[in-house]
Figure 1 (spheres, protein in one colour):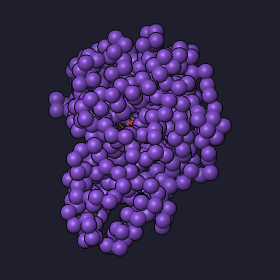
Figure 2 (cartoon, protein in one colour; figure 1 turned 135 degrees about the vertical axis):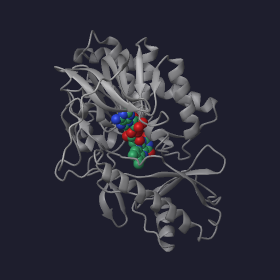
Figure 3 (cartoon, rainbow, N blue to C red; figure 1 turned 90 degrees about the horizontal axis):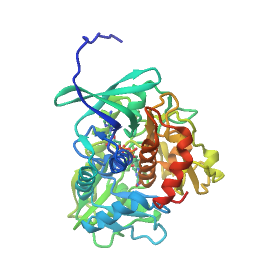
Figure 4 (cartoon, helix red, strand yellow; figure 1 turned 180 degrees about the vertical axis):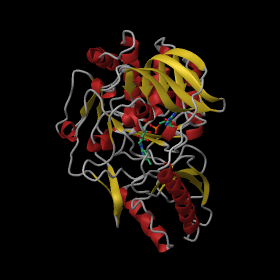
Length: 426
Ligand SMILES: Cc1cc2nc3c(=O)[nH]c(=O)nc-3n(C[C@H](O)[C@H](O)[C@H](O)COP(=O)(O)OP(=O)(O)OC[C@H]3O[C@@H](n4cnc5c(N)ncnc54)[C@H](O)[C@@H]3O)c2cc1C
């Protein structure tokens, strides 16, 4: 490998904040809104042109594991309902989930940030940090204005992939403990022209039927349980049908190739469906603007949630929410007819402890969402977005209790009590 040495340069300091949240996905945007409401001078830095991460740019369109979660989770649903962007999941066995309109979600998150007084920088990637001892002093972003610096007392990594923690030199794990393989990535899409007899929310057999139909017309989907569900928008449906294996979040080559392959696979699948009887009018409206990475870095925290915690339904005095979602490990390589496994781990409702939201190596860095401290198997359960919302609310509550430039581990019980007051089951 050849290296070049960058010239030293002066970076303008554009602001100073109590709390800087990097990454505006479900976890980061919730943390920023909650912190703004709690009176912290808050900055939210987001790499894309909209807030919401996998919810919006990723076209996820369905929130899972909402049981026992009121607080901001309930408020978000109420606001989506008022804007006509919410729909229940149409599956009586799967009540704790809902479907939403991703465009309404974008507008709503903008409004909520503005109402909470959060400063938002879109199109701004965090590329570096200023670290002094075991604290971060500031972050450096790249955007239209070039490199800019923001100083802060406390920081939250909501980048999903743990970019901020990695820039700060924190330890982390990535992938399966034996093989290092990561869960596959997928590209969501919105399509229209689906036949009237397709169920609004699929059961397992409906997914198999869609796979067989695709195979009949020459496309063997890399995600062997492809599915479609109805959106709360006219004739539109969300389609998830592909897997890209072992895409590493820190490899631009991996992500670029996988993104292009995914887009092509989704396009060819929709073209193939048009040949089937009743599907002649189906067409692809849009694919997600970024590839959905299920797994990135799992940053080392002051506690690591493990498979054992899930299997034993472990509860903690500093628990911030209760997770019920099963272990959902999408196959790490293509296997005919198989899409996911739980590795034999039966989840009993368990807590996410506040300590798993605190970086081990940097005293003023909080974690939220996909990048919190957990093992490969636990991550496969808590990663769904209702838990990201709860974690966002919890780390913001922790920030409001912090004295000076450090998150206090012993504030965990108080954060848990605050979460209970907000309507979270703890
Ligand atoms: C394909 C797929 C399907 C899934 N299915 C479901 C499902 O059906 N239901 C469900 O509830 N969950 C589902 N999940 C899980 C869920 O979407 C994620 O775990 C969740 O989005 C985590 O939220 P987050 O805020 O931590 O991360 P993200 O949603 O990934 O958001 C991170 C944000 O940070 C920004 N960012 C990243 N790096 C930087 C940087 N350096 N500087 C600035 N900004 C940055 C990104 O642009 C993004 O907006 C799925 C995930 C994937 C990928």
